[in-house]
Amino acid sequence: MVRVLVASDKFKGSLTAAEVAAAVSAGMRWGRPGVVVDAIPVADGGDGTLAAAESAGFTLVPVTVTGPTGSPVRTAYARRDDIAVVELADAAGLARLPGPPDPLGASSLGAGQAMAAAIDAGCRRVVLGIGGSASTDGGAGLLRGLGARLLTASGAPVPDGGVGLEQVARLDLSELRRRVEGVVEITVACDVDNPLTGPRGAAAVYGPQKGADPDQVRRLDAALGHWADVVAATTGADHRDHPGAGAAGGVGFAAVALLGAELRSGIDLVLELVDFASALDGATLVVTGEGALDEQTLHGKAPAGVAATAARAGVPVVAVCGVNHLDHDRLRAAGIGAAYALADIEPDLSRCLSNGAALLEQLAERIAADHLVKEEA
Image (cartoon, rainbow, N blue to C red):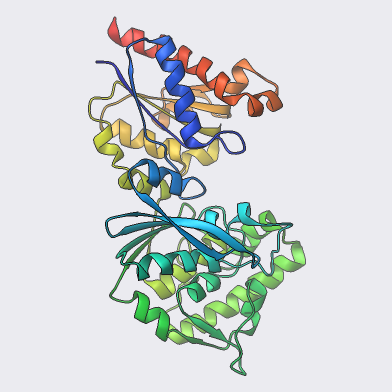
């Protein structure tokens, strides 16, 4: 039996991971009648993580939380048994901004509220995907959502966002500790190793992507430094230089310093949750992909993680994408035998975005002809 496993991430701005899988599956069946095609949509911890969990049998539990700039947001956590998956991007990420970015005031509060809902409902392991953050608040909002109180010198609540960190004088962690300590294991999907502060920190590297100008970057970096000082004084440990502390505007820092969380590769976590290793059993070929294959792909993105796991099982891998910036040698080093790009058959970007599914079907027919027939010869 010829069996193809489609394990692709989304094509951002064009197709969801499930839509990619459907298009590839249809094209494969046209190109190789009788082929069995199974689909496991994947993600690397950013947007699409909830959808990947749902496709793997998790149940979405709706919850209303506070979005990055204060408006209510309808999101969900994914649950299977006592495991919950929370996607920061869906609760408090850039995609949830109702208007322009708010680099100083945006908060990660909604992600903490979603985690709290899952924990209070009985989940004892929480996987938090932190890609796509809209805030640079050092994870303060996340902690507030879990019950922490951040107070000024006068005892007033600290304002939301990174700018509010300037006023933090003390922390009340009693409610957070009641909810979390000894109750739940928290794992964070994190694919960067930036520290919290400094030239490689959350504000300097990622602040501009969230709308911060140079003066705001400097202000945010100083506020994050003050926040780290207060946390260190409270806990007796300084985690500002922990690899990944700067992830998601400092959510990585808060998770490690105050939640005792472990930071792990996002795609590795997702592949474990969807039991990708077991799905490889009996597969003839794996098709993975994302919108653009580039240098970032090689450093913890979904196609690289899929290819590495498939290689250990001895299953060949090809990739589909919108555009490919990697040469053959770079692809082969990542375990990807070949890449098929929409841009190869339609150089017009607007047409690629609007007609991606049909173009993917054409690419999948080519893949079937290039790889499946040869294996049967």
